[in-house]
Length: 140
Image (tube, rainbow, N blue to C red; front, side, top):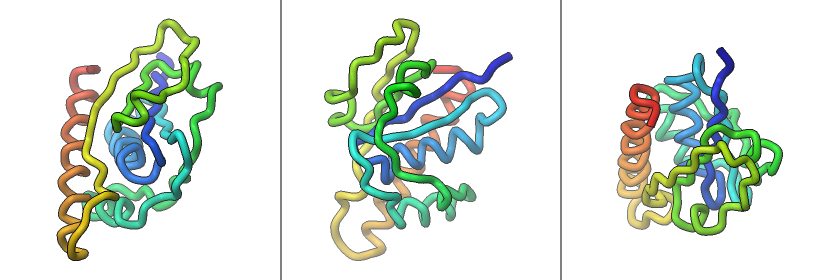
């Protein structure tokens, strides 16, 4: 059985899509090929790397990429993680793709002390993990 391709999209491919990529790669690698990208490439956010490391998932080797039309059009699932990406996602010519929007707050916009900012990253990370676990279990 071939793996299903899941393409996570966000605006900058620096936090949320990277976290989703990391969790699905860790929890569903036997069933899913996982990619992530952004409308722009903002670079991998070091706080996202730290928050994921605390959860036992290493995304430090991930790259921040812009959407690749070839990957987009062969994906089985295209999942946007922020409203901006959902509204501005390129046209997908693959009529069999399942497109979902899972909205999560942008932890990169958190303000306050370092601990308050990291708390936001951890909360978003945990919400994404819960959603990925449900996807792996239920396929939706």
